[in-house]
Length: 169
Image 1 (cartoon, rainbow, N blue to C red):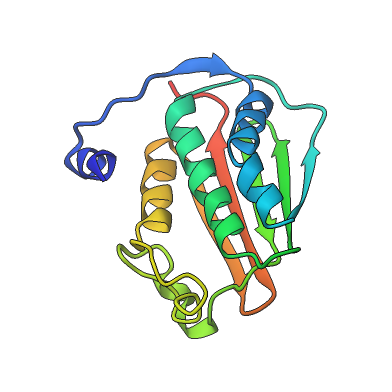
Image 2: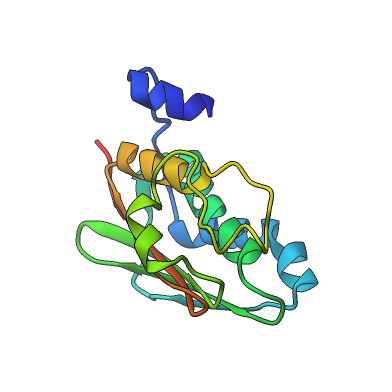
């Protein structure tokens, strides 16, 4: 929450460094390995072979990916699936995290990135939560010069796309 306030007040600074997004994604997946195994989720990854190192804040980008992967794990039922995709174009690195989870109701989609919002259908599966994860992910992604998009359908799952520049100057 402190990072959000610092972003909103313009007092947060980036720690830019060169790193490989594939390595970052691998570290994050390892962090969640136990939860993935406990729910017997099928995890698949598709990593484009032409991914090159990037210059960004690996801690903040890692936080965003962790928040989204954590949500996918939390809101995907036992024996569900999560797919990770890492790709690049000339200017951007794109992370796509999709799941076979509960999704969000159509009428609630405009509120997904609002502070404290939680989908009404989610409350019966996971009654505890702050409703800050997507709000935080959007603020930090934008702070990194990127964009975040969500496509979600009730009882079919959610796909989150995070697109960030390869280099922040």
